[in-house]
Length: 88
Image 1 (cartoon, one colour):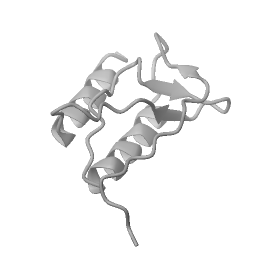
Image 2 (cartoon, helix red, strand yellow):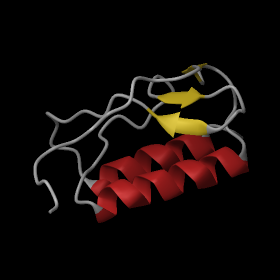
Image 3 (cartoon, helix red, strand yellow):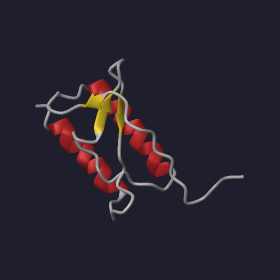
């Protein structure tokens, strides 16, 4: 059976992206991850450089979702778009 109301969060691997410029590939991978969260009915709420980590292979992942926020999926996508714009 499916457990409701439970969110499992892995400890972050690697290090935050910080001032590194996210590549189009990274942004696409993050968009897919965010879409999966939204499909599950969850908004991350903290899509920013402090919450995007890169593992040893350079794969980005989102860390530390804000479960106590009123963020919406639209907020997450807007934040990802701002990261994309900041590349230029």
